[in-house]
Image (cartoon, rainbow, N blue to C red; front, side, top):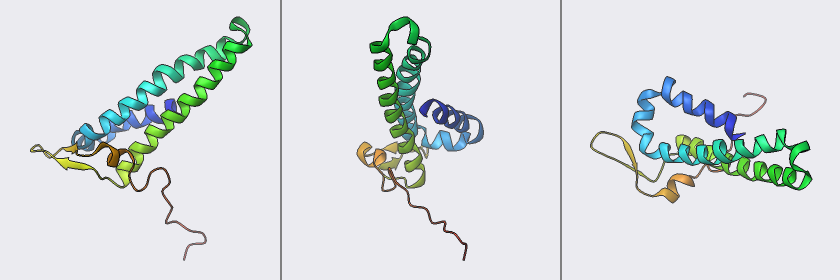
Length: 127
């Protein structure tokens, strides 16, 4: 989950939203770094053990690797949801002289009002 969504989001910041990334980098950079640490390092490593170690490592290590992939996927999704929620309802920030957003309160940044659930304003049938 996090490997797929985090990779796409990182490239979007750099290629499509470069001015946005410049302004929000001091806030979103650490959040994305936490996602990369949990998804790419731990989740991907244990995913390799889980996929390719079934016959080599035994059932206990395979179960442990599967459990670790599940836990790290949760943490990865947590950080991705935090980044997406802050982009929708930003709070806990101040601006510096360069016009960049900087952290004023990390708890408010991570746990915005739209985290983890953001109700949709879309309804069917359209009125």
